[in-house]
Structure formats: C-alpha cells, structure tokens
Length: 498
Image (tube, rainbow, N blue to C red; front, side, top):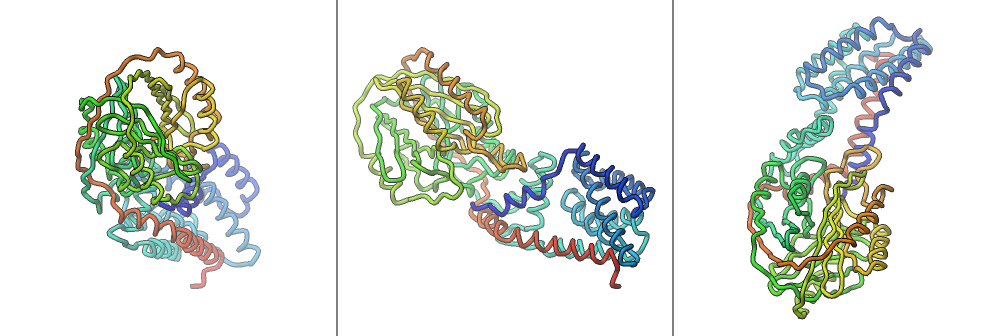
C-alpha cells in the first residue's frame, strides 16, 4: 500500500510540543497579548473545556490539552488584535466553535449533536453571541465533506477510529472500522522445528499498525519459549481484523509435525534476488533475499513444497517486485537435488528494545559449512546494515541469512517517523555483541520436524487496501478543505459578514 500522504498527515496531526513548551508559550502569549483578550473569560473557557472533555470522552492527555489551549489563546489574541487594527467588532467564538466542533468530534467517543452543543456552549465565554453557531455549522460542513463511502468503508468513521486508537492505544476503535467489511480467508500456519527451536510463519500479514488487528501476531508468537516468527509472502490485504482473529491463528500452531531429513543448503540467483535454500527430504525452507530492495511479496508465491520466507532485509521507499524473476527462481530452487547430511544447531533469542526493533533471534546451523540465520523483530532492515552483518559473520566462519519479521507494532508510534528499518538506531549495533556471544555456543545434534495447519480467520481484504490507497490520494485535499474552512472562520471572526 502507498501511504505517503497518510504519513505526512499523521505527522501534521500528532506533532505537538512538550507540555513545558506549551506552558511557556502560553505565558508569553498572555504577557504580550493580555490587552487583546479578557483573561477572566478565557479562564472560564478553559475550565468549561476541561469539565466538558470527560463528559464527551475526549481522549486528550494533559500535554495535548495544554497545547490546544495555547493554540486557542494565540488565535484569539490574533483575531482581537487584527480587529482592533481594522476597527471592527470581533467574534472570535466563530473560530473557536469551528475548531472545537471538528477537534472534539474526531477525538471523542461522542456523536455530532452532543459535540455541537458543547462546542457552542464552550465558545460563549469567548464571544457571548448567537453568531458563534456559524462556526459549529462550518464544522458540521467539514464532517459532512468527509462522510464518504468506498467499498463499504466510511472515510469519517475511518479517521475517527484511527485517531481514537492512536490517542488511547486501544485498538478496539480502529478494529471496529476493520470489522465493518471483512473477508473470511482460509490460510495456514507452518512450523519448522530444529531441536527445541521453532520458526513459525503464517499466510496472514502482521498489520496494519501498532497493536491493531494482526499487528500483535508477531509479538504473541515471539513470546513463546524458543519460538520466533518469520514472514511469508503476504500483504496487508491479509491483515487479521482484530485480536480475536489473531487468537484463532495462535490456536492453530502445532509444531509436533513430521520428521524431515536435512540436506545440504544451496542458492539460486537472479538479477534482483537470491534465494537461499535449506532443503529437507519432504520440504524446503527458502529465504528470498533482495539484492537491493525487498518488501511485501504477493501471497501466490507460496507453494506446498516449500516454506518460503520473504526476508524483508533490504529497505527501500518504493518497491515493485519482479514477479517473473521470483517465480522462475522459486521453480528452479524446487528442482535442485541435494545430498543428505548431518546437522547441528544452536538457537538463542534476545529481547532488545530500540526505536526500530523489539528483539532478535539467532539460529546457527552446521552442515559441514556453517550458517547463521539472524532474524530481527522489526520492520525491514537497512541494506548497508545487513551487508555489515553478513561481512561480520563471514569473518567468523558463518554465512549469514538476515531477515526481519515485518513487525508493525512500532508503526505510527512516533510523529518524527512512521517506522525505522533495523539499523537506523545506533543501539541496533548490539547485534554484533549478540553474534559474538552466539558464536561461542555449543552446537548440538538435532531432529527437524515440519508441520502445516489450516486455519480460517477474518481479514481486511483487498477492498480495505484499495480504500487506504484512496484515502492516501485525497488526504491532502481533505487537509486543504479543512485549512480553507479554518481560514474562513478566522476571517469571519475578525468581522462577521452576517
């Protein structure tokens, strides 16, 4: 999904300064602009707003409330100052009621009528005039503008659900939107077990973001003993709509599978991709590695004869897969015959919390030649960082296969960035200490088992992805509409034309 516009809108919407910065700014505004505002009326406004927020169930913390007051105070001072310069009678309440109507509606659990009444009443201390209803009506106009439906999804409910989930960290608001139109999907869970170490992949995608829907899938799997998630070819259309669906998938995990015999690893290589194959007599574990770029790959690349892994280990902003090359390489990889061999292993996982990841697992495999499978619990990997890990492992006698889980639990956490690929945070370099520790582990003989279990779960479907793409295209237009109405309410506040 292309979400560049949504990312910009996210940064604009949620980028608020610290509470201390807002308080200092508020004090400066009061000192400089006290001649242009009645401080007693503004105090009454502030108290009334503070009282009404819990009644409306507005999901503002103290930081956002302080910033909001500072913003209102600044604009009211500006309106009154300009009006005095132009010798007009200001009605700043028009602007205030418009802002209250729109902001309180989208950040509260209340409906239009209730928000409209409180927006009008709270604006009265600023401007005790019935004309402030103009601002409420303008706010209603904006809400109507974005009350559009596309493929069963409503734009207004989408924004409200997203904002509430972001403000509260409660996924139920956004999941309610996802549940409005879902697709029942018959997928699977695959598990390959090396001794006591288990690698699990599913046909479902771990998204869309933070703790919403399937985004908790990775963390739940990684919380199991000696278990780590790896990412199959799948995309956002297969995001589970809620945590209930995630629990269905988790309940289908069964690693007590059929014993498979190890065979010597090999590679098949193309222009843009390399596939590293760890074969067994009845199934092949295949890692798709992007030479320069890789991201979500289509679900239909999965095959019954293999456990295919989309490594997500070469981050780029725009990714268009070469499906012709990938299908050719997978076919060729399945044809190669390999020799049986003995296998030893060691496995260890680490909880590592940085801006880009939640943990890392290292699986060492000794076939006579040594391999290190390094799996980051994060959303993709910086290519230069991956190459540095590969060089480090090679110097220590191991061929590295680097992958990430494509975990979306950190997506949308910060307004400075939507997410960072692994390697972007200096603390990610702890991986080299981790690898040094792992290289000292004693490798043991192991029995390998493989299993595949069917599972049905509700997913968002292609229609939701199309809807998100539509939102991404028009979100800047929506922002322009809002800013236009904001400016109009400002001008009307300086001198009402009615």
